[in-house]
Image (cartoon, rainbow, N blue to C red; front, side, top):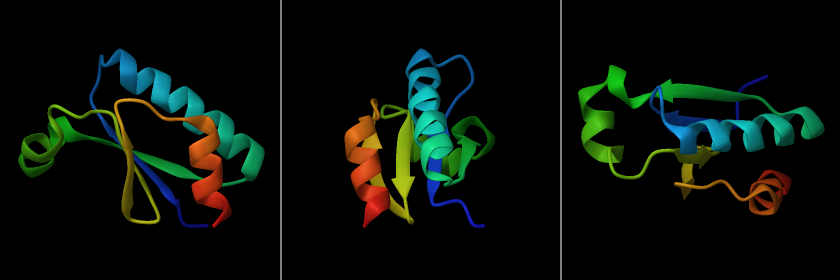
Length: 79
């Protein structure tokens, strides 16, 4: 199975921790998978997302930043 959700974040980010918890809950309920990418490992991602982490992508398109709304994420995955 290919992950439909990508979480871009950085270590030590409390908003990233909160987003991860929501994503993990939704994935556990739906059987979906996610991948997490540290923006600190890539200068281009750092430049692009520094002020917006966490950033969530669904199916390759930006979905949210800063906060992950559980209902909105579920709706995006249902499409």
